[in-house]
Amino acid sequence: MRLTLHLARLLVALLAITVLPVQAQASGLSEQELRQLMQMAEYIGVDYPEAVADGEIISDDEFAEMQEFASVLIDRGAQLQESPEAAMIRTEADALQAAILRKASVQEVQAHTAKLRQGLLSIAPALSLPTALLNVDESRAIYQAQCVTCHGIEGKGDGPLAAQLEPAPTNFYELERAENRSLLGLYDAISNGIDGTAMTAFKNLNEQQRWSLAFYVGGLAFQGEAGEGEGVEPSLQDIVMYSPNVLQSDRPELSGAAVASLRADPTPFFTGEESLSSQPIEIARAQLEKSLVAYQEGNYDHARTLAISAYLDGFEMAESSLDSLDADLRKATERELLGLRSQLNADSNPEQVGAQVQVILEQLGRAESLMQETTLSAGALFIASLVILLREGLEALLVVIALTTILVKSGRRDALKFVHFGWISAAVAGVVTWVAAQSLVSISGASREVMEGVAALLAAVVLFYVGFWMHSKTQADQWQQYIQNSINRSLSAGALWGIAGLAFVAVYREIFETILFYQALLVQTASSQYSALWGGSLPVRYCWLCWALPLCASLLACL
Image (cartoon, helix red, strand yellow):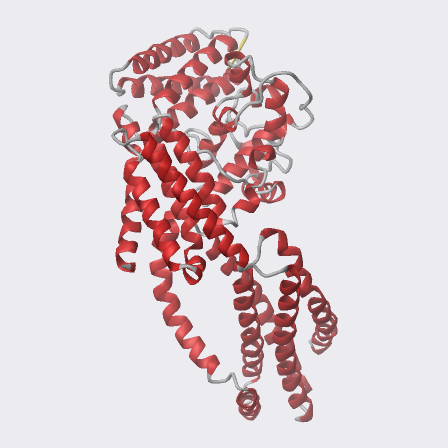
């Protein structure tokens, strides 16, 4: 049965990959090609003032780039399959090229690029909007790591390499430019780069990081611009898909102040989403509701994509926990989700689809209640956190004390620095292990499905060896005897680096166990209880710090 389910998951992942390009291919171009054309059209509208002013060319390079991109739009437009939208796109592409060649006004060129982009949007597959962003500090850290050399520390286009680049890097604080740039355009530029410029694709960033970076740089020019205003609040789709100027001209009912405010601070769109990212059932529920809306609007491909996300990014993350509590409920919910995905097409009965979604939502509610009952209280988390660190910390402390005592009694104080080097290296390795563990836990969706098989094989080999070795030393007397014998051998052989290795293994063993225990605790911890979990570790961490500082001083004295 489990093998069948895993095969079903593989088929679902393959379906997600193969279904999405259908609408784009029907237009004659791939989704990536359409998105690139949208990016080019927006880029021309934004950068045209840098090429032409008052009917005169002010930058030959920029003007040549405008001509090149306009030619690409015409060539690609000719590849579109015949339709009213394709005809409009070709007409606007021709008009745009003609306007550029006669050095028309900025307003005329931007009007053509806006219509061209709108036409391309109408034939492109529905965009999957971001469901959660990183916080501002994390987004700023990504910017500092990836963008400073060109765009500068503050984002004003004055980085160390800026003077060498043509065209010059964007100043994200230029309000006029920002008002003509959509967040989707920024996201695509980050994801795919911009041909003919120094802007490269940041494939090393995941989707959430790219969206977070796009929102961050896209909001810099609007800081302080927000204010009260009348009108309809824009949706997340409005803010992502269209530039503020396009929204102002095409959607006059929208509040301009609200648009500026949400570009500066998009958190109202994602209120609660940060906590949802750690609550699989909530993710599944939210994606299912979006899937039903997409289905009712006739967007069947997008509805299936959201339903797949409800399983892979939501329910599947809670399966193991739910399986230990109510395996029948887990299996029933999984079957209903699989059945729903097969029903999201034009031939299905809308009433049946709606009823099936309600059944799944009820099952998710039962699963959520069941798992919440098993969540530890704040007091229990505090005590568990305290006891884990206290126990493992004392074991590591006793090991280091045993090593130093033996060395002192042997008259080998010169070897103490090797002990210090060993436990400090173990502490650093422990931090790396914790970060790696958190990264592996955060892998989601279809990528996680592919990696699980590879990771499981590797983990089985490594954990079997390490676990067997550590288990053979778990008894306190055996462990102490092992340390005593090892240090005596190292001293007799003069292999002082063996002392460092022994200290490393002894301390890292306790750190590794602590990480395992804390990962288990995190599974049973709600996002609102993190303060209790980390609060329990504070007293022990303080004691560790008081112990470690004198040892570090001893290490410096030994050097």
